Image 1 (cartoon, helix red, strand yellow):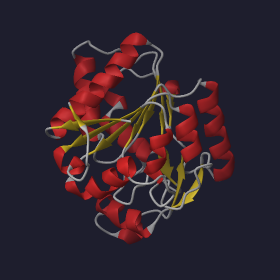
Image 2: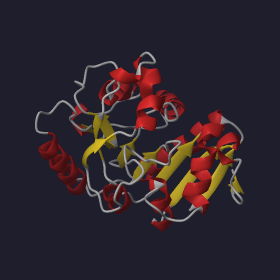
Image 3: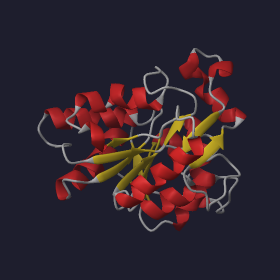
Amino acid sequence: MKILIAEHYEELCKLSAAIIKEQIQAKKDAVLGLATGSTPVGLYKQLISDYQAGEINFSKVTTFNLDEYAGLSPSHPQSYNHFMHEHLFQHINMQPDHIHIPQGDNPQLEAACKVYEDLIRQAGGIDVQILGIGANGHIGFNEPGSDFEDRTRVVKLSESTIQANARFFGGDPVLVPRLAISMGIKTIMEFSKHIVLLASGEEKADAIQKMAEGPVTTDVPASILQKHNHVTVIADYKAAQKLKSASFS
């Protein structure tokens, strides 16, 4: 696990965008795993800027998103489908049929999970997987207690995640869906060739320290990343403040 400490959020975004740009330049039909939430927004802005500058061509790129709320249509303003189109896809030259996001409004959620898992396998896995991390150590919607052998599945969100995400639903946790589809930990670990985990803000400091330096435990799902052979953690100073050792960017 390589840990880079960025001086500030903007540098975090540039460092992570550079990894993706290098991957696409080396392999035009790269497969990317993407995440939602506030942390990757700056990354996506940087990728849009790089695209507009003619430095990246997304026309042959394929993407798979980590997760999606259950019960929300793709057009719902708080769906991750809507988020990705608003913050990235509508601004770059992605082919629509190369974009994959779990179908949270599929009435057959379990079947949708299997289809999604098969699509990732058929694509040959994910070249670069972007991850965020929850304050409770979750990755995707794999909450504490998730089995390390889990594949793409329907998950029940923890109360802490519901409360954290309420800000996207007008501050009302009652409006936050209780279920989601998420890539499982086994899916992330097995299919991702390079994992890039992003963390910003002091509220992530405990999770980053436990993820990188604590025991590997289902109490901190992200700790399993210690077992992956190619992980880059990019954290700003506030998120990295409790780490005992790290290399600087």
